[in-house]
Length: 329
Ligand code: 3HC
Image (cartoon, rainbow, N blue to C red):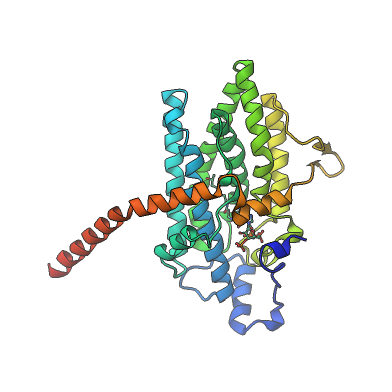
């Protein structure tokens, strides 16, 4: 039902009989678990979906700094401020690894950034929500980075070498991100009743958007079938979403917080938690630019890009001068 809201419906996966010998050999390499490297043959559609996914992943890292950056000057202690600074700085590095991975596919950094600033490229829906209290910083670390880790660990084994390798480093740092978030929530839940209420309010606002991070329902996922055939995606959106729910519910119980879903219930037959219906209207509204903070986020990125132009020009001038000196030596 929603597939038409995000371009056409699910991409058609072409059968082997329609592939060229080169594409068949490419698919055999993928099936054999051989990593595809930048200089290897790859179908144009494979290259395009990698550019799409990796660039949007990079944009998510960079835009994802904004909600948390909002609280660096308001952290309750010097220790929390130092931890949050380190996390936000990590996210910039994650963006750098991923933008570098995109460049191995033959697109320039300038074009990739331009796609974000023009609104052409997406970034994760989750970063279009406001951070209203300090507890939101705990909920983001615990839930958003927790959700991201579940999504990113399989990508460490994806078929494209540079993407898989970037993910290994990123996932190591994400573990620190989610632990520091949970630690904030634990401190609040063990604090005053007002602090615990603040933690519950943050969970109430971040729970469902964290489930939406995993993308549309499998039945509405345009890219999943082909991305799984190419081992760009190793698990479906719904599989990873379920894994996130199963992992997080016991953590919320340990915190003494109530997950805002009256239909959440352990299903012994399935061996998973059943949970309520996601508000897909909200999801599609947010990814089409109508979320609470979309305009603010893009404006902040455009301003930062414009104000940072002189730094890029200076670095490029220095690099040119250095290259000329080297050539003349
Ligand atoms: N936010 C924005 N757009 C989303 C989305 C989300 N949460 N979920 C899906 N979409 C978009 C897709 O990009 C696609 O649109 P497009 O064709 O214009 O690109 C459309 O909705 C259909 O969705 P599909 O399921 O068919 O798309 P994918 O196969 O690409 O699956 C995905 C979506 C699971 C997000 C996949 O792209 C993916 O695994 N990406 C890599 C991980 C990533 O980007 N994570 C984002 C968070 S990063 C982060 O949290 C940083 C951490 O440090 C906090």
